[in-house]
Image (tube, rainbow, N blue to C red; front, top):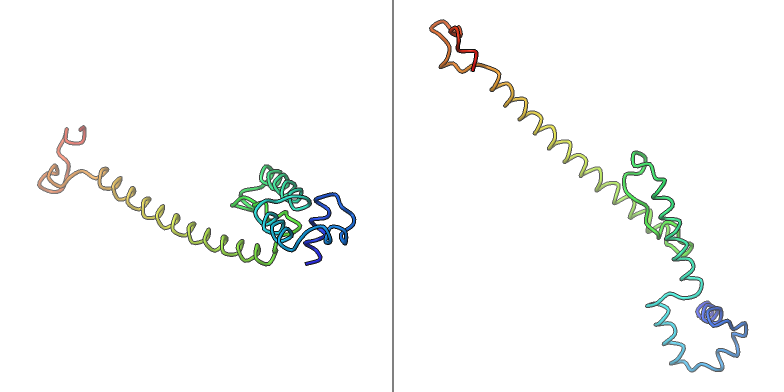
Length: 142
């Protein structure tokens, strides 16, 4: 509770927390708390802006081979729950591995199908072969 009063005092430019507590009714204070949850101000707003800038900078210089998915601003916030972010990152890594496995499986199946189609096109049909399985002269050009 004291931290909420301190944040509000800082945002209002008031070093005298006790005087601010005397001036605001409990209802007004609750409204300020609700407002601060809905709309950032003060240090939280500055942290959000800096986190966004750091995130943009990191994504500009990100190596997609080392980090296949982009950074998010919360990773650069001083107020972030880093354990929660670690779990989210782990889930994202697992999901990416599953997607990559599905893509690899699909590509392998598509390559196999293309190879089979190519092989069937390059062999002359049995109907165009002669009596002993030889291709009659002139049948190859076609």
